[in-house]
Image 1 (cartoon, rainbow, N blue to C red):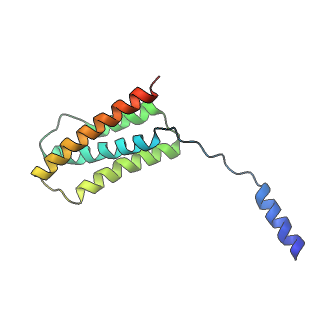
Image 2 (cartoon, rainbow, N blue to C red; image 1 turned 135 degrees about the vertical axis):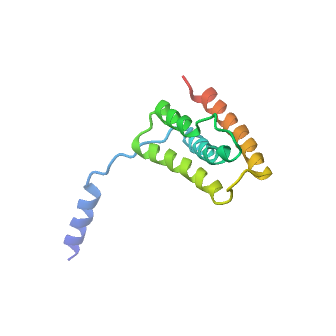
Image 3 (spheres, rainbow, N blue to C red; image 1 turned 180 degrees about the vertical axis):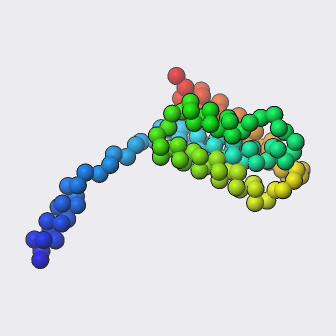
Length: 121
């Protein structure tokens, strides 16, 4: 039995494994930015801002970054998580929602600038 076990182990180890893509160094920041965009997509219409298309901004961000399918899914998932996090608690515009929008806009602006300054060509 031992030789068969060793043969199975050897066959498993020798089987080709799919290559894993390496995330760019800004991936964590991009996921946070995506989460912020999703949060803003949920919150800003509650407080009367219909001028900014946060979902369109997200689509443009993904298009410009040209991520592989795994990264694209993670960015979309972060956007959806941001949306869902605020959708659980807010049904109307409150002072807390307005404060959250201000914080999210500030953080998003800072992240976008940092990513652009550090990694854009």
